[in-house]
Image 1 (cartoon, rainbow, N blue to C red):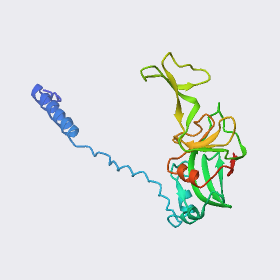
Image 2: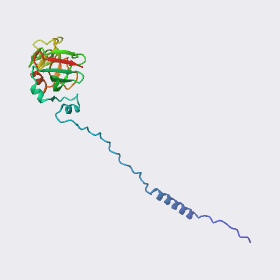
Image 3: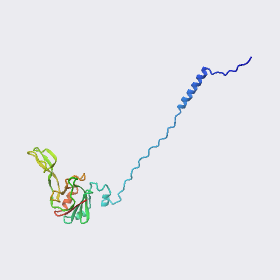
Image 4: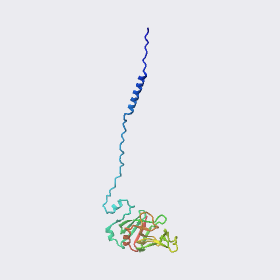
Length: 227
């Protein structure tokens, strides 16, 4: 009688066990924590080094080292200002830098901010002399139109074009420390200098500088306006 060799088959129980073990193995593998890539902190953006003013404080070079010429600050040479008189001074106006210079001879006694004529009312270049000085002056061309009650009808008025209503009047813009240069109404006076090229042609001068310019000049003082 021949013996028949047979390969034992896995029982259903053994097959289920194997599948369970395989599932547990795969699950355990998925639970192994993965190494998180190291995130290096971003390097702080390098700040540009501040420039150190190498010039002696109070000197003209120290003053010009900063945000010049755009600064609204005024530089004064106390020694020259003390020596300045209406007989030995002159004034220079630089349109490109919007700076004014009170000169004693060829030396700068004071450097100050100005605001000159806008594109439609350019300040004329040339050599002039002060022909009139009025400390408390109002414009006879530019100002406000008021009604009979004193209310403003138009704030940016031109007396040649804008007429006041019945009972109202034209009130000229204040121009303290007026120093006339031309017969067409161009002159130097106190005014807002926060904007470049903002006037109707006049040279608006900083409030902390114009009283000194007024005091140290006279009718006849030379004034040069250049680009």
